[in-house]
Structures are given as structure tokens and as C-alpha cells.
Image 1 (cartoon, rainbow, N blue to C red):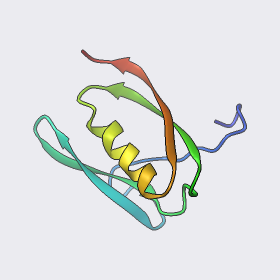
Image 2: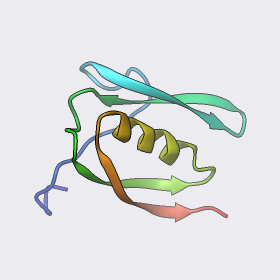
Image 3: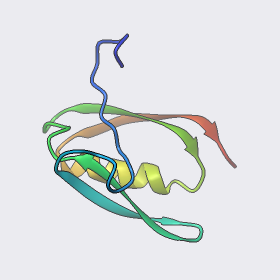
Length: 85
């Protein structure tokens, strides 16, 4: 993000971010979990590329997309390092 001159917004498990957050639950193969994003991380109309290390069940990308949309952002695309079948 720094090299491209664009913003970076972390989406983390609960309790990892220092300021006020918004959370979203998602399903895992063995239960549920949550992700959080800072409430001021995205402004309405922001276009977002989601980058994650692994796509397995799709739960984290679905929760991340919901968080971004709840803040008014638009997910333009997503990229993953590993895509498990």
C-alpha cells in the first residue's frame, strides 16, 4: 500500500485494534469467529481492494466485505495468496 500510495486498513480478530471498532461474525468449519475494523477506517464511497493470505471457506472475505459495506465502502475486488479448493 505504501509503495502504491494508497491506504491500508487492517481487519483483525477481536481485541487487536486500538480504537473504536465495528465487528462482524462469520462461520468457520468448526464454529464461529469475529472480525473487527476501525469505525473511522473507511469513508462512504471509498473503493477497496481486499487482500488476504488464504481463501478457504470464504468466511473471512464475506465478513470483511460486510464490514466495508457497513462503513459505506465499495469492494472492487479481492486477491488471495493461496486459494484452497
